Image (cartoon, rainbow, N blue to C red):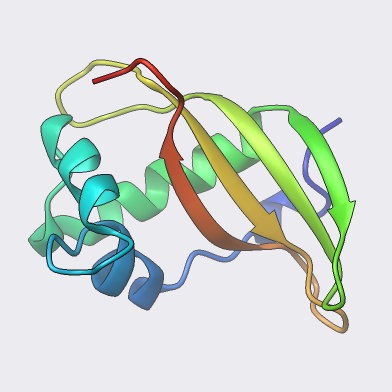
Length: 114
């Protein structure tokens, strides 16, 4: 199964800049180090946003859970990186009630990749 309305997925700039690529963020610092290791940079945040959109569109959902806000989907698989390597990550998407497509909640490496 793929994410519903995958052509309309949402990756907010703030999710990338303030969290996933922010080395000073309490919860995001290890994620930032991981993505930096593969060539993703804060000043080119759109590259990570695009790679995550591709990941969400092209990889299979491995699990879906219902939350109070709507269904949450977990997607796993390789992500395309600026340095050409393709590490495996998990991305989490939520389809908020009343919206037209899922939005990115988080992304992180699968165990044993660094």
